[in-house]
Length: 367
Ligand code: TXA
Ligand code: MG
Image 1 (cartoon, rainbow, N blue to C red):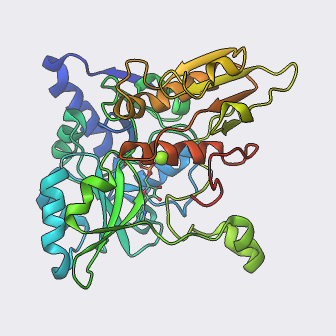
Image 2 (image 1 turned 90 degrees about the vertical axis):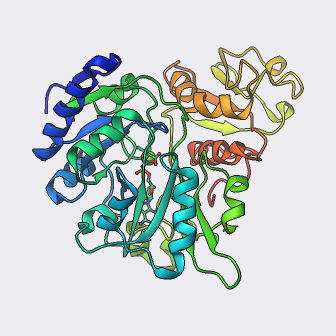
Image 3 (image 1 turned 180 degrees about the vertical axis):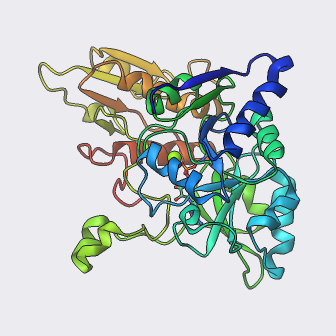
């Protein structure tokens, strides 16, 4: 692949033409980067294994990490998943409450979904995006679309077309520029299960649909702690090559090239002479004294408008990418409060810091 065409979708009067162009590309087995309300995705016809293989190749994604399948209607869920009778009510309630939107449901898969999509798992992750372009493309294609985030594996998720270009330019034929993503963080992933009294919603990835929002539909549970890669390697040397116990929960993810540390207190920060540091601040950080703690080379605030968590979520990957490109030696991040959307932000921060020198960001290896 040499050239990546960026298709401008900002003019609503041209949207129909753009959608048809994308549908034609997908129909011919190509991959296209598309905006969604969460982050940009790299889409392919989910039922075409060769097309899906191109997604893995462009992202350099290991085969053990399954993709999310996007549907365009409630009815289309039945094309890719079997909803067990005992889960029908809760699944319908969840879809009605959060679809189209940033919630992904892990359900038993239908055999027509190629194994490459689900990494051989018996389940498939399904979501319906509320983004007008993604919605129109899935409907126009008339088939489900597999679309992981449009970044190289393990790197920062893209929330703009230019970020996708940096990640995948030259590797894919087209990127649809639909502007900045409204949510800024990837969808919440849950696996619903029948429980004794209420359904159990296993929270596989925190996201814009928060635990608090899900609680009225069932008991929300975090998956059991995983073994670390080191522990698994000791138990079985081949295990490090295999799928994580909970896919999508790899400790190292969303990683900037620049080392990143989460520090709870400004007092813990001991700068090394000659090194340049950036501060990723939550909203001003006057209280924690972070700004005064050092003559920072760069300071970026997640919530400069003081919109707090919602604003921080929207800006998170954008700001992280900016700091990564700023040329500093290390990024020091201030934690956000771990309630509501803050849980999803801290999850991304911990994974982004994995492998960097340990700070007080919590248990960085097994989040
Ligand atoms: O907001 C989003 O979900 C974005 C947009 C583009 O839709 N997509 C996204 O895809 O974040 P991706 O591939 O970056 O993350 C999907 C996660 C992966 O980490 C994968 O392991 C997990 O979903 N996943 C996929 N299928 C699964 C399954 N059957 N069981 C458990 N986890 C699954
Ligand atoms: Mg991703």
